[in-house]
Image 1 (cartoon, rainbow, N blue to C red):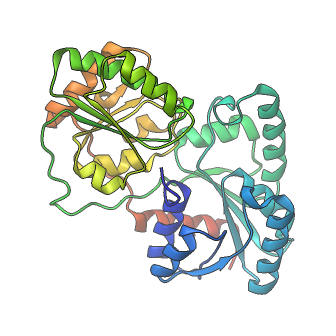
Image 2: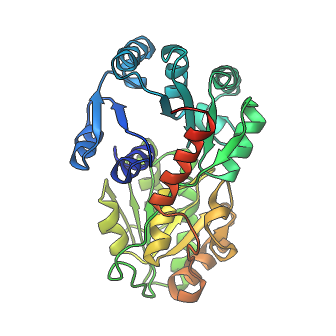
Length: 340
């Protein structure tokens, strides 16, 4: 949905609050993230780092930063960065990883069993270099243990979210449904359209916004036409997520897998209705009243109607960690490595 979503959002939140007892420098490729990090006062090194720049350039860039900064801890996010860190960081710093994007079924991300097996072997090998491992949900931690068998315990540190201004968290009933997701097969947006078609049969006032871009856009537009939903479904491309949530009543996310979705967290703290697939870390965030089987169109429609119209059925994040809580737990993970 945005260059500042997902892991970038996590890094921005950490940089904004800070990790207690630690000085933070972020290595990131040129783009929107370094600019936003500087806006919150973070120390940033822009470098040719990441999949778009290739392994050789990424390793060389990180080696240069490590030589110059001499960090006590190098903390990477997602498996590509972990591989770069394992190759580049040397022996002095302690290595910490946070996994945000593993799925129970590797084909969700790798699209072939052969590639999935090769990558699983590579990830198991690189994890042997790490001194601490963090997962953003218990489901993520279980998948890491099952697939990669790390030599260190996996600590669960969920993505933190702060409570929003009361004016933004003023829930109201309604059936304006929103999807904030890449238009890709693993998001199961065709199933959402089928469920929404069932909803429209009994609630003609219902509308659906499929916000985002991706390879499934032509097929989804064709399905909208085939279902006779052209007057009720909008596909605007990229939207500002905060503004979009303010204009809708229910967030729908029927993905094949989610780890610890910021979209679900943001919707819940705003008092929105939420309908999501019963997979991955979703049950750790949401009550049973928000969870459905994605391929059951009638169940999806029923849940959309309940979440839109019954404010008492909507999720509440009672006891969920704030961003500051998350940062404190990250500091505890650093301390567990013996780094200073």
